[in-house]
Length: 182
Image (cartoon, rainbow, N blue to C red):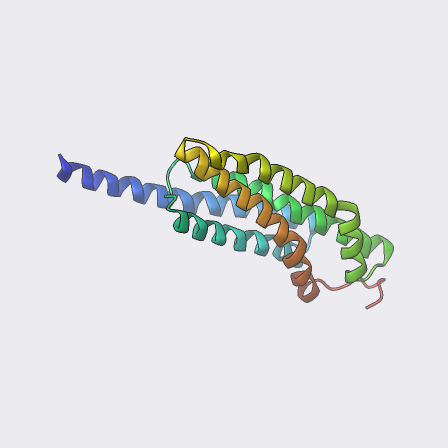
C-alpha cells in the first residue's frame, strides 16, 4: 500500500509545483500586460511588479518558516494576495504619473501628492483587510489559521512595498516628462 502511495504523492507534489509556476506566470503576465497597457511605460511596470515579486518571494519564505505546505488549496490564496496586493502600487503610481504629466511635478512632489491623495486609502485598506483576515489566525482550523497569517502578511507587506519600494524604484527608473523640471 505504501509503495503505491509514494509515487502518487510524488505526482501530486509535482503537479502542485507545476501549477504554482503556471499560476504565477499567468498572474504576473496578466498584471504586466495590463500595467503596460495602462501606463505605456516599462519603468511603470517595473515599479509596480518588482515590489509585488519581492513580496511573493517573502510569502514563500514565510510559508516555509511556518511549515505551510504548497497545496492545491493554498494556490488560490497566494493568487488572491498577489491580485489584491498589486492595487496599492497601481493606485500610487497612477497618481504620481498624473501629478508629473498634468501638473509638472517633480518625482518627489508627485509622490508626496500621491500619498496625500491615495496613501491614506491604501494604508487603511491594507490594515483593515490585514486585521480582518489576521483574525483567522485564532481559528481552530489549521488551514484557516495559516491562510489568515499568509493573507494578512501579503496585504500589509504589499502596501509597505508600494509606499517604500515603489518610489525608490521610480527614482531610478522614471524619467520626468519633458515639460516637467528635472
